[in-house]
Image 1 (tube, helix red, strand yellow):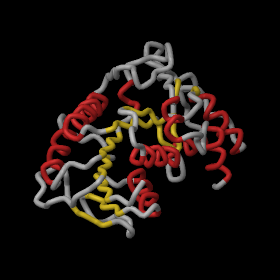
Image 2: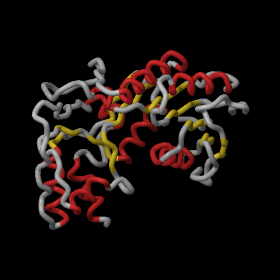
Image 3: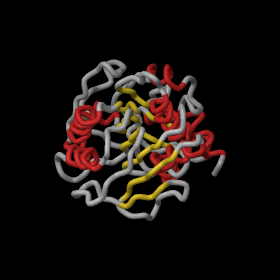
Image 4: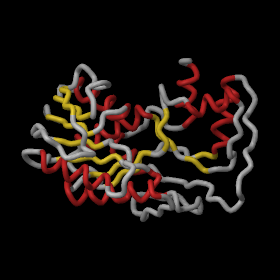
Length: 268
């Protein structure tokens, strides 16, 4: 895509790594954070707290990427996005709102779910994500990207659990995406002439948690974590279809947990 002005609302790990790729591609990236700490040196820093009324005008942007986590209050996303819209001189031509596959927490694993399936939530956090998606579409006509469990360098919680021998729910169905492939997906959505309106960022192999921790344990040369005691009435995860992601990014660099965690362990 031609050089663009990109505005990042929220620049944690995913936003920052996306911004670095965009800067490397010749784009200008402005990062909005509550404090200047953590804003990469290659970004234009803008200190502002979108959870409160903004006292600054945001710069004109060709594209907007929102990677904010849910707030503590119901309506956080809508209020924040309304403040951003009011502070912009004009709406960007492309907005990407990063949500989560948590919006399917109320489903079971009876069949693979794709972008045509309606969300079902069982928690306040899940409902806040749905509210955020709706607000982003209404205010910015946003593309919604829903990552599954994000892992990669610096996201080694499961590896630490295996090393500690912590019990896990071996039968729980899980979905994941390596952070590198998620960033590639966001970059592709920004560049696409006609991106999908909703995109599930999940890799090619849904797996039980037992499969994943068994692989990690084998590679680390430690015992497989024991089974956790689980309420038999509890929901045991979902299975998500990532076919649409492959249509926009092509092959994933880490198509399954085997390649992803294998590379992480090899680099330890």
